[in-house]
Length: 110
Image 1 (cartoon, rainbow, N blue to C red):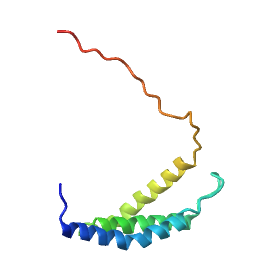
Image 2 (image 1 turned 180 degrees about the vertical axis):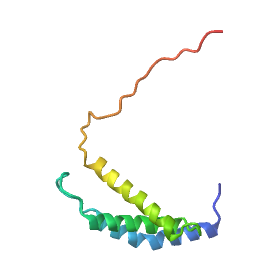
Image 3 (image 1 turned 45 degrees about the vertical axis):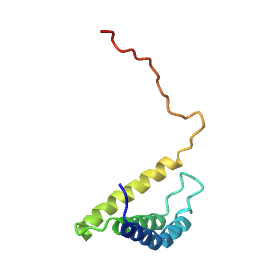
Image 4 (image 1 turned 90 degrees about the vertical axis):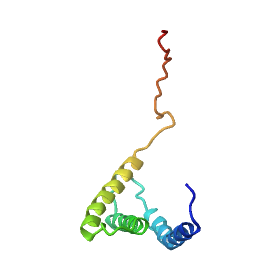
């Protein structure tokens, strides 16, 4: 589906305004604890969740995104961030690859 020049310019403007937020987020969120058992800093969680919510609000402007709905979305975003941090803290080895079972399948002869 081709995109019009107006939609392209609108997307470029949105990306340009979100760029300072992304660079701030990478500077703030990169402060991960060295020890995975160390408690997570709540301020970094709050900042990251705020940045994600601002990105959602900017990228998907909709009159249905009322403050009540955004508070529900904030809970989901916070849960997703915490889940991603738990998964990322689990160390993997190169041998921890998914196991693909390859079976030969022959179509029935009719």
